[in-house]
Length: 355
Image (cartoon, rainbow, N blue to C red; front, top):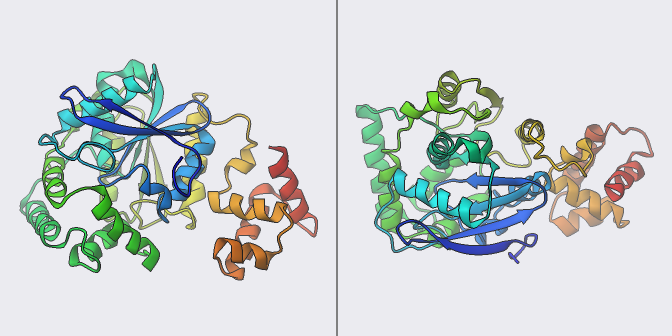
């Protein structure tokens, strides 16, 4: 069981070259596999102010399968091959080890090219493809090459060092409006996720992961989700995917964050679009009323405490929130559930208890 999160089962398998990979399963419903970002740690992510609510909300939609890529988290760190081919082989190994005949797949950020390649090679095993904040075509010019050299130097001198220049650059790209808590977690994640050498070599390999030639061959239903102000992967990357993947649809998030946070307006938009897209293939959890599925993990936390008889001030204390924030969450809950008036509080709790 992960610390601070719901029960998850962590398992291990080996890729084609013998690399030991860790993957985890949580949630309920049909399978949804995440081909995820550059930095991850299956256990530590549950402590994250960035990832925790993301994972909780996805677990309401489906049985979520995530894995640490080679060289990261709980997977083997002693590896030499970070190529796209090796990473696709890792995904193939995880899908097989998890016993998945067919599943929906989310390719996030640096995991996008891996998910795209897998979907082209194994279209019979991917029911639906979501490409979130990612890219397919690499832009190569003098400016991009200079930026990559600068990024490599920042990793070399600043990896895992609190208040480092690299941390500030990385945080500004990933989450421009990061709180101190979120920025501090990114500091800790660097040391937990991988070594300086692995970070440099894996970053260099990702700079070669161009799958533009495969985009026209993607045959599974595809949803592209991209934040308009994304600084890690430009919004034009999302538009490029939609223009080249047959019948792909673009959802634009009104956000600057590369990873959408659960307390920003773009989050319920993302959840609603994802749930609707997956539901078309029977992936969304049918046992949960549609309106409740639009609530964020934090809103569910607030509503559960209200259901136990806690006053707003007690909810604020229990969740380390301000009273104003609790009131804002409750207003959002009532609006999403279509409730008004003095009975809204009791009606919202009743909806949760009956789900």
